Picture 1 (cartoon, one colour):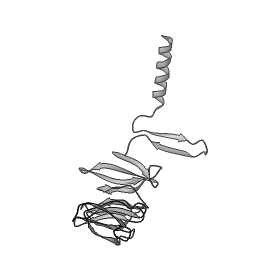
Picture 2 (cartoon, rainbow, N blue to C red):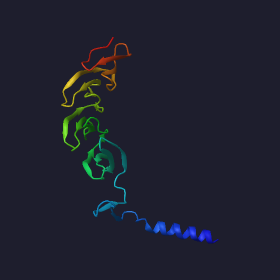
Picture 3 (cartoon, rainbow, N blue to C red):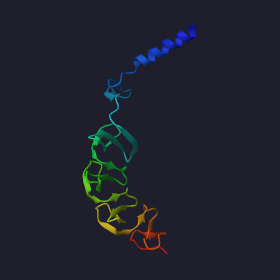
Picture 4 (cartoon, rainbow, N blue to C red):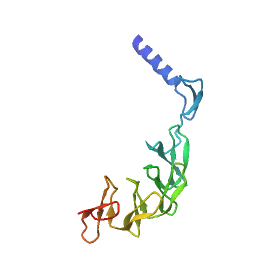
Length: 183
């Protein structure tokens, strides 16, 4: 009986030390006399893993999800204004605008490749797959088309090669970074 009472007292004291939902608690850092405020209420409807120092977060606003990015302190560094976003890869993230077009932003949220593609994938080895008129090709980090959009399907580059599918035979073939078929 005494053990149950002791366990209950410990549990209640632990619960009492946890801030209520939405409150802010003050934390003293051990290594500095600096005071830090930590939020205990969730700000995001979706939060994903960190990639290249930023994590994609999404918030439900105006009948849809809007994505942005936070840094490791939880600070919103790219506003939740994108209708879709991929993780950062090689310093850029593919995003979808309100017209359902894709482009790329840098880590400050600046559009570096305009949203004009039907689809866009993360960069790999300096190139990213984009889709135009139903066909796939590859762009570099300036948005210059390096390999024209002529493939039915396309995968990311790995070790200098990428798998693509040609409409004529519906088989995957390998291409190099210049778009030449590897035999």
